[in-house]
Image 1 (spheres, rainbow, N blue to C red):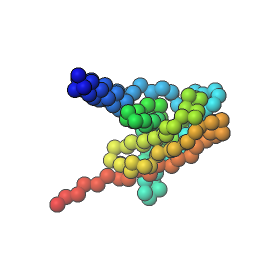
Image 2 (tube, rainbow, N blue to C red):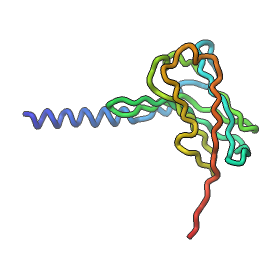
Image 3 (cartoon, rainbow, N blue to C red):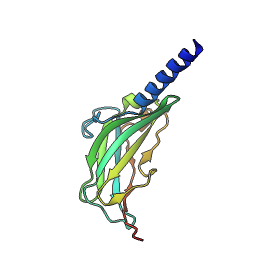
Image 4 (cartoon, one colour):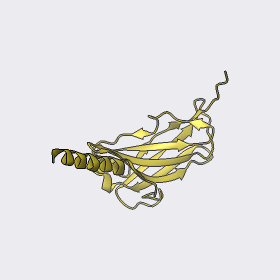
Length: 148
C-alpha cells in the first residue's frame, strides 16, 4: 500500500514539475498599449565596442520559482530600432507583490548574450514601479568560431 502511495506521489510530482517548467509562447501584451499601472522597459542594444547591432529582437519573460519548479511566462516581444533603442510597456498590476523577476533577452543572428544580461529583479512590485521607465542596456557579443 505504501509503495502505491509513493508511486502516485512521484507521478503527481513529476507532472507538476513538467507543467511548471513549460513556457507559454503566446505573448500576454503587445508592448505598446497600457493605460494605468504600466511597467515600462526601455534601453539600448549594443555590442562590447558600443556599436549597435541593428534590429535586434527582444523577448520579455516573467519567471517565478516555487518548490515545484520554475514557471516562465512570455510577456511579449519588440524590436530595437536602427539606433539600438527598444521600448516595451504593459499593465504591471498583475505582478504587484509577486516574487518573480523579468528577463529581457535580445537576439540577433551572429551574436550571443550572457545569461545575466537583461535580468531585472523587481522585488515586491508596487505603485512606485509603475509609469517610471526602467532602463536596461543589453550587450550582445559577436559569436566566434574556434578552429583547431
